[in-house]
Length: 90
Image (tube, rainbow, N blue to C red):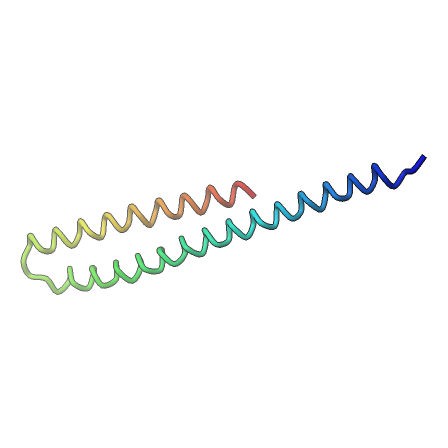
């Protein structure tokens, strides 16, 4: 009887699983990098909007700018939730 056959097959299966896991990790990392980039953009946009709010004298315009900040806050929180859910997958 040749014992190498089943052992070799088992080791090949393990290596295949490791390769698949590495691919999944790389894909998750790429997704996370895209999310982090958007989060950075949101932070910059919010800072600019907040400066404009402080300088704006017209109440309606200030309210519109505050609404934009609120929308960015919502998007920011949603992106954080996506990151949290991704980290739970690993």
